[in-house]
Every structure is written in C-alpha cells, then in structure tokens.
Image 1 (cartoon, rainbow, N blue to C red):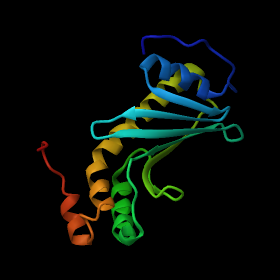
Image 2 (image 1 turned 90 degrees about the vertical axis):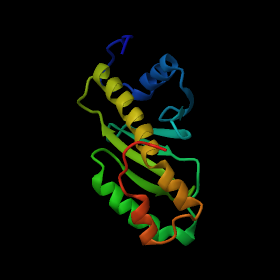
Image 3 (image 1 turned 180 degrees about the vertical axis):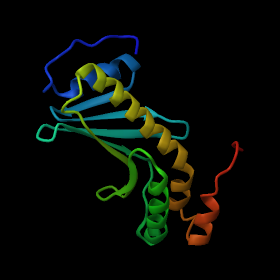
Length: 167
C-alpha cells in the first residue's frame, strides 16, 4: 500500500483501519456501530455488500460478502450440492446461503490477536479483494441457481465445468 498507518495498541479495533482503507480506496462504507460496518464494492459482474463484524472476545474479524440475488427454497437441494462441491475446492473462506436474507454469501473470519496493526490492514485488504474475486468467479452459477435455470444435478454439473476464456 502507498500510505502508512500509525502503530497502535494491539487491542485496537481493526474497523478503524478499515475505515481508513475504505477512504483511501474510495470504497463506499458505513460504520453501523463500534464493531460493525458495511462496504459496497463493485466486482466484474455486480456490486457486492460486505459486512464486517469485530469480536473483541476472540480478537476476530468476520467478513460476509453478499451477492445481489436470493435463492428460493425450491432449489435448495441443488444449491446445497453446489456449495459442497465449491467449498471443497476453496482454499480461503467458504460460501453459504445467508439464512436471514436467502442471499449467497462468501464468508471468512480472521483471528488478529497476535498480528501487528500494520500487518493486519494488509491482510484485511487482501481478504476483501479475495471475497470480491470469489463472488465474481461463481456469480453466474449462483445467478442461474437463483433464477431457476439450474434445477437439477445434471444441469449443475454442466454449469460447474471449468472453461477457458469468456464469451
């Protein structure tokens, strides 16, 4: 990064750093309270809502990157199979269907207790960017699942085939 952060106490809330990062990168953000904030970032296929939650007890920061669609109950079996297959191959984070909103979501939690503030902001930036990349990567399949285009395990297998390039 091209800007520096002051070294602060280890128990400093990382959301303060995320605010600075969001300002620097011109990300839209809203601080809801001391331990919660939202970001909105544009991916290649959509804008994504990222909810960040800080937990003092565990010194953990939870990321929840929500997509702009809802999964209906009728396709839950096929979606569950897709989540199992997709999450098995992910190295960082996992996808869920967010229960309150029925929206697909990429989630990740970072433990930050022993990580200096200057390092943690770089890691947070990386996780935010990874969340957007992973949501972009699987956006079309989630979209087809949400609109009913994929309603069987056979169609899911075809949609999940790795392809080269993009049409």
